Image: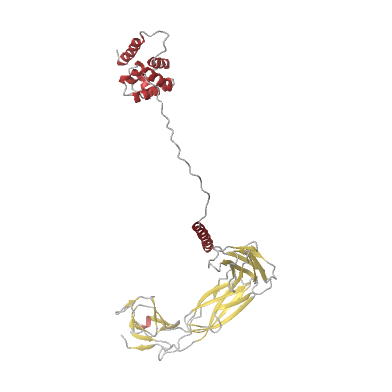
Length: 455
């Protein structure tokens, strides 16, 4: 006989013994109710153990009414409640029957009546002088804080800018138009700046509602404008810049217009990089050319012939921007030059302007080229050994170019004078001696180059 069968027989035997002497009319005891309910559910104690997580020995003790085998009253009540719920019985009724069969009365939780404290009568609202002063100070501090907040917000926020007329960023007007009224909005009191290349900017002030208007001049062709605003109190500039392009059509037979801003007539330059800048309209191309007009001083070796005129640079075609502006650098050697700027329209109509300039180098700018062979060089700049060649000098290969710049003088010792070519302040002097002949030459303009004995 297995243990499970022994346990079932023990439970059945105990119930039989417990049932002797009980009349048929007596109500079933709690153990009987639990046993009958489990039988109706069709489970054994071990199945109930798995489902309720209560050991089978404790469930058997509950069904036998042997409460001494249970851990204690607290655990017994918990087991009864959970087992009753599992068997479909009323847990409260099961617990009440368990107490009755044990001879216990139902637990009653006493209710304590705590006397309430007497409420003091509410006093009316009173204002003391100190309270009034404190309230006024608080209001003042809050108002000042709000003012500072507004000012900080204003200083942190840049002014706005918008253009309402013209409505589009790119517009065309009648070919007779010479002015246009630009309208827009901004922050009240802001200064509205309208910039256009080659002309002074326009400046207007937005009224109290933020509206502003500005009359701008128009030239034939494309007129580009950049509109921005500035808050004069905070110094902040608008985050955005509005770009406008107003085009005035050209007449088919109209010749180009030409303005040369740089160089000015009679300008003197201390180096050969001459900026050529200006504006044109109705031009498909702008060409810059130069003509040599003569030297500015002696640059002849002692006892030698006058140097040949400098090479004239090739004409340069400058790029014309959408707004008609153009610019290009023009490299010239020392001397007097005539610079001519020529604008040509799509119909091949021409407009030309000439500017006379003088190029006089400041200090000494000497370019040394190795041509036809290599040579040893040693150089003194303003009387001091040049650092790039050093005290011992250096052998320079054919095709090598070196540049030396001094305040007063540059002196060159060459191991082969015939392969050493010099360009002094933009003027080519060529070689000053014979190939294979070591010579030393001193360059200190405006004096001509002089041969020395320095080694």
